[in-house]
Image (cartoon, rainbow, N blue to C red; front, top):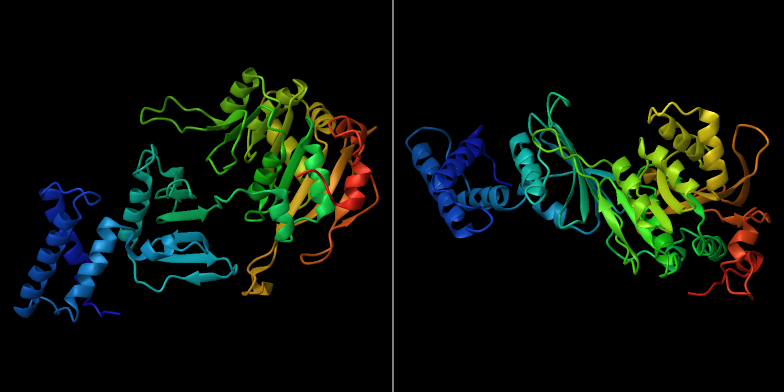
Length: 428
């Protein structure tokens, strides 16, 4: 690694950027021109250093390469963002760390400055309609050709630049694929496949990074091609080929504070498009209240929610709907969801300190519960599958979900829910 005199990099980079702006060069289109400006800036610094103004660079070519990465690519993060095994990147001021498939948090060894990291964020946002500035100090956007979700904040909201770049898989998730990775057992996957053949309500819960979106993608892939599926997301993460239906992404307010399209707006909008199944990628706010209208319209629905258990997920959904401020009492909201949600699937991920680096971080379904009719205000549930710990068996409790008759009406005549749970096989 080249040892730099204090301030040498910033001084040369400022000079190079000044030349690029003066000549109106486009870093993405005029790489040769940018390279020439960088070389000129480095040579100018070396001449000044030899005359006593600063310490000369030991390796000018290394400085040229570093500046080119900073200006035309993603600086010190260029190689990091190209690595397929990197799941999340965290930026806090000048500090960059990341989590790879092993689940361990590691620091980026290449030196970086906060200005460089801010430039990386601005470059990532350059291909979107979203901006990070004093008027919009918080931003979320799809970046890296739709392969990642960027969440970023700047002062005064944060003490310094604070950002997370979360990669999501673009592979086509399927229930058989999740079985191969140990996320599900064949019997549990068979039950979920059967639920998706009809207008069931399936809630997927878990902590961040537990694989909720991957499981939701697999559920959508299992739905009949004749079902009209409408998917609403704050930031697009679902990538499932739909024979009938479409995807919709929320839009933040414009520079003048208008033209916002919220997730709640999208859920309300798709209700008018004759959906068989409404999907909300992640429920966090008032869009939960619109789901109460959806279930009353007879639509099936699926969504994800952050929670520590399957039962906690039910309460989280109710709380989100109440916070919409529609002056609807909690028992009413709870009653609506109790009648509409059939299954809750809870996912979890392995502690990174216990993960086997050779096999990566395990993400598994920990429990599947059924919501059953209740005579009181709280939810009543029955466990259908349970796993005591990550790596342990996901076992059927022997209980059939109360919607078994409803599900079986959508299955081939010779197939029953009990057959699926006992044999672990279904039409694929």
